Length: 217
Image 1: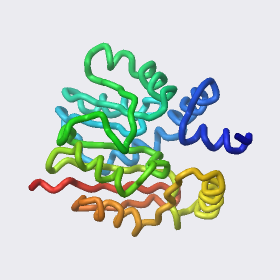
Image 2 (image 1 turned 180 degrees about the vertical axis):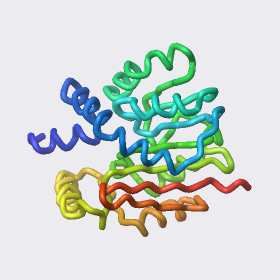
Image 3 (image 1 turned 90 degrees about the vertical axis):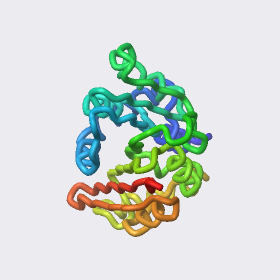
Image 4 (image 1 turned 30 degrees about the vertical axis):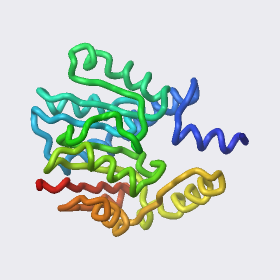
């Protein structure tokens, strides 16, 4: 594996010392983005929430602080991410308010209709089979439950030129990378079976979030 390939792989699958440093950086860099995105979804005190691709664990901590009588679950395919997230949330875990597992978004290790809300911050680009994986997320949501996908870049956004170059590099390395524009985000949710889909841009920052619900019936 070339040096460039190793660096790109750390973005999608953090591992080892370099992966831990990357996760710490993600916790810091994505904090304001996450706060902005979560403003677009209602979270009640008793919510049961799943954070997909939990990375360094900061989003889990934010969610646990909001759902004060609920429970937050995290899942990530990277062993390093799971370990880092557990350490970051060790106090929440000790109180039984947080649980973190290793697993893939393609085969979530949770029962049907378990969650009121699922979140994915800055990682849906790398899902192995995005259309199918969206349906897998739909499976674990309760009727009326919501998925919010939050990202700091998107096709047609403020940083489109840089994103296109990154997408091309990922393609050359045979890594999956879904670079979607606003309409494609909406279609992704609708095609997976979500309703009431809302896409919000914060163009000056290059941010986007997409929110959709599982039908109640």
